[in-house]
Image (tube, rainbow, N blue to C red; front, side, top):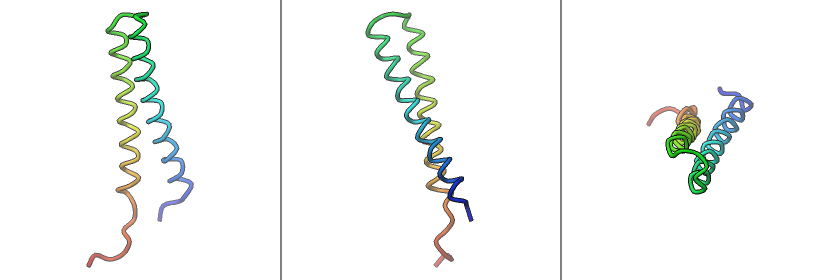
Length: 74
């Protein structure tokens, strides 16, 4: 049986990764509209943000599918 504290920490880590990834994508988009840095830098930042976002979604997906079964198979 999985501990509730372990599940809670994985949920928090998933949420933090999703929010951080979306924030990084938004910041890269905002900086690219102001043309403060070259396009390559903002593209790289948005790509890294997408990777962090994907990691958060992966963690959430694992929480959903790693649940213990409800009972014996029918």
